[in-house]
Image (cartoon, rainbow, N blue to C red; front, side, top):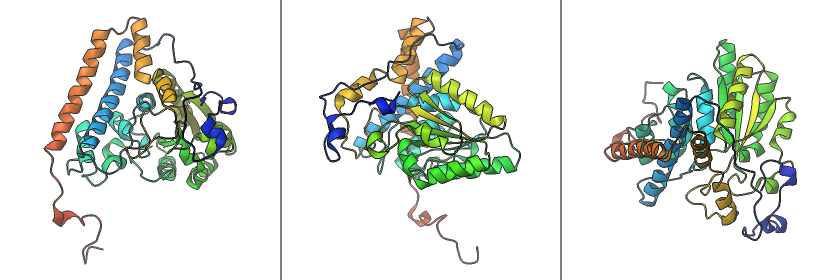
Length: 362
């Protein structure tokens, strides 16, 4: 499917024939051209951005491996392929901006500053995790980093972000609210209620929709009569922009500009970040709804691959430097796994902690 012009997207046989049909490889998928051209950043900033994406990629790959070994249990939603969104957005936001994410939030948490050790320990369900082992993959949380989850319910974080932005406005703070969610959340009532209130109250809030085309497992054109998400947002008189979410440069520049406008008092802004996940929706997903050749074609637009190629072309990176960055990321992952392995499980006598109030404590 096309991310550039949803109305002109090519439809696969499965999409034409209706629900319950497996995706096939009979059509060549329409994939936008990969990002190209010079990167106009200082070299150190560019290398830092590349390292950010490598850290996320290697951590997620290791999580998939550990899940196969049953060391990570429960649900696991990997961010592989979407790294440019978290990397570009996090560097464009201020450290005290209030952030809310969805259940595919490992990359957001890591690049927000939540330690990889704390994230991995949380994946293991250990007390040393960022949510004391009680949240797991979908509920990473760190108040000191102004990172408020990690939400297991589709769209649940959007109204929370509205509340955080309202608090910032009432306190006359320069902080922004920002929430990340997938295009599947656009079908939720909470999304529409939140946009309406944010517009009515002119809140300092950035809505980041990571449109990876398939939500949980249904193509956008098969679930939405109007697949142009920016047109939906027009109904709430909120400025909206569609951005290439596979290009970390485009993401960073779009979020930087949008954040400046919101801090200037413009009210909320909506960014559709057109991206693509290379792995299934979750580790339980049989992934019958999209063809392998489509996934392979999108991998040629992978954010790490295309960004590093641009840096090499302009002389800011060579293969040895890339391998050194990659080795550094893998070493951090290995350290985090060792930390999680050595962590401690919560004692049985503490299982009701924070759930029930002791008599007399109310």
